[in-house]
Image 1: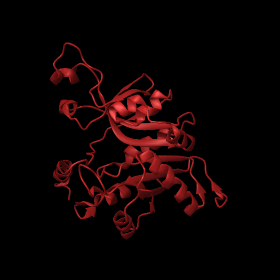
Image 2: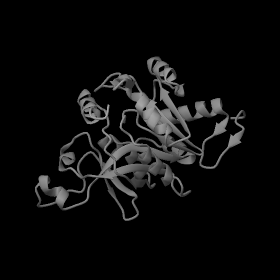
Image 3: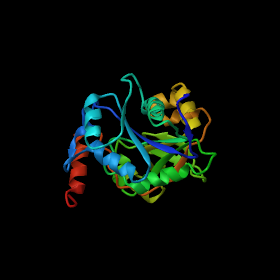
Length: 260
């Protein structure tokens, strides 16, 4: 990378992977939400928390829309099997464009139009410790209905807020208590799909082979845990609704109806 001339400590790049194809909601980055495409809402919120943000996409339609609202975007391969590998390619391309080496990356979900800048700032703060190579966001479950939501992923933590395990099942299991009452007997955390990597952590993660727990749960963060590494969890309050389906979009529109 001979053309790169600048190096800044904890110079963080926010990368928003955005795919047009989706089995449950094709084209969702471009759906209109109160006059803006969803990807624009995510991009603008991210720019309030981070100095450098770029959208990584494999679709020219998304590229065109991002450029139309003044956003930065890089084209990446269609062959990536997950957002982590797409982030590596985006990082390398953007570094060449900017002639800058970034010391850390925050992987921001492109389907979180309600993401709050302060939540991203909390994730950014996790990188203050040089011992942290991978961090993510979790929030306390306050509504028992979340325990029945098959779209949620749950996590258990140690006493230093490091992740013990991620699961699509509600964990832990509360024995001898009806599930409707579990929330009254234990503190549950759900995972918010945002990640912060040190530069070294991102490259190390991308080189790990898929693990058995990752494949079983379809949660790639378990690959890192199964390899013996730690994931620091920032506990935040968030009312964000990820848009995985058209029904999720209706929920977002309903929540924001009074505002817009």
